[in-house]
Length: 96
Image 1 (cartoon, rainbow, N blue to C red):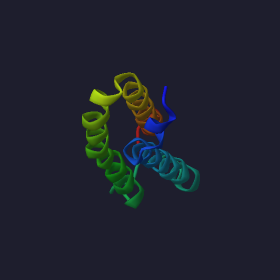
Image 2 (tube, helix red, strand yellow):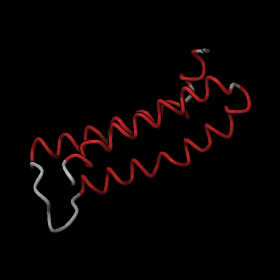
Image 3 (tube, rainbow, N blue to C red):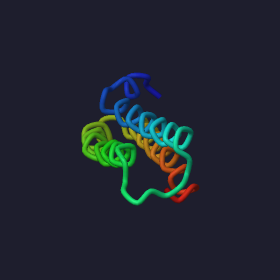
Image 4 (cartoon, rainbow, N blue to C red):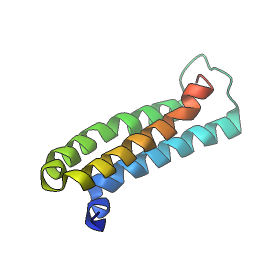
């Protein structure tokens, strides 16, 4: 596998966005707990924006790199999907 594929911004940015979203969720849980709130706070909105904001970047990456290096691109796409699942896991587990 070529290391160049993972160094592309369109490969790294979604991974970083998932990491930031996970950090926001875990930080919110640490400081405020898992109690449901009447209104979604800033943490929930930031999480939603980060997760939805990845879609066009991932689509661009897939469109550009799946034709050029299909195996490498699939590894990157799988890692991006795994990062999304990991970021969403606390939300699903704590039913936030």
